[in-house]
Length: 175
Image 1 (cartoon, rainbow, N blue to C red):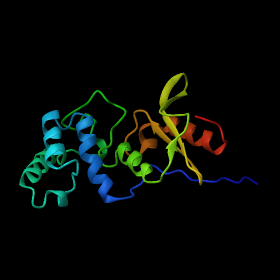
Image 2 (cartoon, one colour):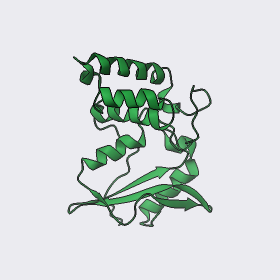
Image 3 (cartoon, one colour):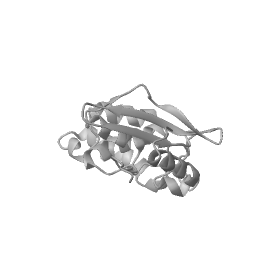
Image 4 (cartoon, rainbow, N blue to C red):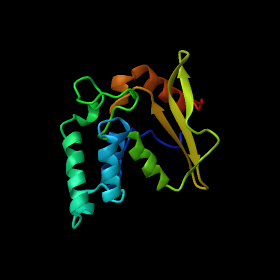
């Protein structure tokens, strides 16, 4: 009998607040938003990119509208694919719909801290397959894994890497 404690989640939706927050940050990180637009929105909106934050703040509202004009026409799940408008050299971060930054911010709310394994490479066939960070607190452990080059539905982009990650997890082998 095998006993497994835990489960696998692929960029789970947890709160609309974090989704709104990270979408603007991620769009800037992958060059969809220019430094000028991002810095202006960050300053005028005090780092809060939710539409409600713009109520009563005309400058914030204007900046969020400008950011939206850059973000909204892009197919969220394929932000860095060739059919999108602003390709980026950062090819391993493809998803503005649910960017990995969202998951990282959500994990901070779980009150876990990184262990010795922090944003370490993991390999498959001698190549970097992604990055892993291990977290813990007094109650539980958590492993965050980023698959290099994957989009919103990671197995669609990187099936071998996803299978390897899952096989290692269920057999208690490290990445």
